[in-house]
Amino acid sequence: MPCRFGRSFWATLGILSLLLVYPISGVRAQDRVKIEMLMTEIDRYAKMEGDSPSLAESIRDKIEENPAPIARLLLPRIKQTELGERRLAIYVWALGLAKDAMAVDDIISLAKSNKSGAKSDLVQISCFKALAAIGGQKPGEFLLSSLDDTPDETSRFGILNLLGQMQYEPALPKTIELLKKDPRTFSWQSMLVFGKMGDKAVPFLLGKIGDQDLNVRGNTIYILGQWLIAPEATQPLQNQFWKESELDIRGLILSSLEWMTGDLLMIKEFSEGVIAKEKKEGIG
Image (cartoon, rainbow, N blue to C red; front, side, top):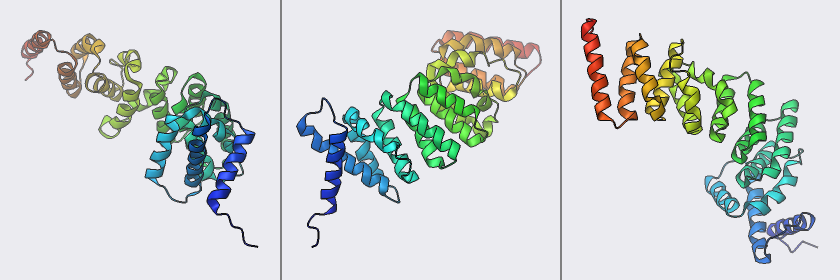
């Protein structure tokens, strides 16, 4: 006898079964239908072969509206490691959107098991992004330790970018590898990482203004003076100007000072001092 029920019935029945096994405390009865429908959307997205930006955006909005109950339903899914890599990656992605700290241990466990089995870069990246979205000390420590175990340059930048997103200060010493890169080709990497790190990066960068490495100095001064526009760097940049031997960096310092301060008198006096010194030394 043919079955009279369609796929939507069985999908809803499956969600209801999950609700019975993993009850959602504190959720009103009228909201459960929304949660069931959202889980159906997540499952549909996870099973798709291609991508659907509109569906992903819909899922994102609905999870952010009521994250706690959906996180409880998603946690059992990421323990089903026999699932395909895309499905696992999507479930982890959705958990990251929920930003539930209770999911951190399970996501880290999945990342570790995935790495040891060399199963999927897709799952690993999804785990890293979810941990960064959740934030906190434990995700930061795990991402930093993962950075130490990652030799690939592109992958290292990806992890540093996530640590910058988290504004995880213990990662700052590791960012020296970005500052050492040629600014003509890779300045965008420093801009992304330090731009996300924000003011927390300023003390670290102030210590690199006079670095012996030309690239480090150039990237540092550019980020401080024309990206973060940190007023704390105004005096250190003036001090470095008189020590600086590279004309390009001297010019960068001058243009940065114009961005960093509204003190026009200071700019005028400093510029006049520069002109007078260069005349005396026969420059220009």
